[in-house]
Amino acid sequence: MNETGLSYIDLFAGAGGLSEGFIQSGYQPIAHVEMNEYAAKTIETRIAYYHLKEKGQLDSYYQYEKGLITREELLKLIPEQELKTVINKEMSEATIKSIFETIDTIKLEKGIEQVDVIIGGPPCQAYSLVGRAQSSHMLIPMEDDPRNELYKMYVQFLKKYKPRMFVFENVAGIKTARGGQAFKNLQMYMKRVGYELDYHELNAKDFGVLQSRKRVIIVGWLKGTGYEYPTFEIIESKAKVWDLLEDLAPLTPGIGADKYHVSDMRKVKKYAKENGIRQKEDVLTAHIARPHTAQDIEIYKRVIDLWFNNEQHERLKYDDLPEELKTHKNRTSFVDRFKVVEGDMDYCHTILAHLSKDGHYFIHPAIEQHRSITVREAARLQSFPDSYYFEGPRTSQFVQVGNAVPPMMAKQIAEKIKVQLTKK
Image (cartoon, rainbow, N blue to C red; front, side, top):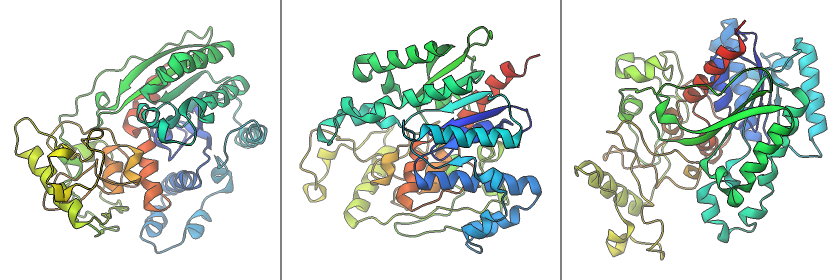
């Protein structure tokens, strides 16, 4: 797994999308720190995948995906030294010392002296433009949200481990949160502990991902090292969103094909093959359609029909529905609460964790399926490989996928940083 000799620590790791890109680029993970139990388990399972792949024993992993062995039986095959790199704890002043102690032990056991990179970003809800717009409905106003201060935990890791470079990722809203003061404070703290930095708002679609997903990416480097913010060339995939969906088993609401296995790779589009999203031996999991009411299904059909039978790709406005299909009293805001995934376009709209609530904003483009997308389809749109197994109930799986950094984007960031870190 460590082809470059480079190592990293992943903070606020989520389901490991950012980490996946760095592993694919040849880096060795020292630790993943994640407070959510299911997301932490997802990372453990991914560690199992890579360990068994390296040993030529992926059959055991496939058995787990098919439900033929338990998770306990799977993890017994993985060295404790590898599993302990997943630290399932919330980061706070009360826990940070014990997290440091665990990481120090891992470094000692693996003979790692220098942490090359620290990656990650605190939960984005506190900075999300959508979340802040809804703050009046929340028990804790956004300006008082304790998650606003989590960047200080990140900076404490910079101060202790002095990585040569770091990657800090978050939503675009971080630049304007608290009138922009939070972002200024973040940069000030980072510079104070010895780093130069730069930031840009990057879009996943410019990295070949079939999704428009804007994120602020801060890259920092130790003062005096001469490193700099990477230059990224725009990648045009020449693919359509359909290319990630068409080979999957067609489903209708409430129906699943969880262990569906594509044996005929001719059905898999070039884009999915070339970007490692689909391999012949992969066992497909989490491809189960959630149930929908007859009313939702009727609305979904109208949404799909309006999009594909109109040259301007018209979106359905909620107030234009027949009265018998309207259930919401609010007719003035969120009028586009029903939205189809843009199957015939170069990229779709942003995959969100809100998928865990309902699928109205992510309707599958096939009218005969008249349903919202599955976890697997959302994962593909995020560029996760089909071999990536998401732990926990479906609600948690949607949150994990929706909050993740697309691995394809993460890999290219990792590659550009690697060029600088490995120069003689």
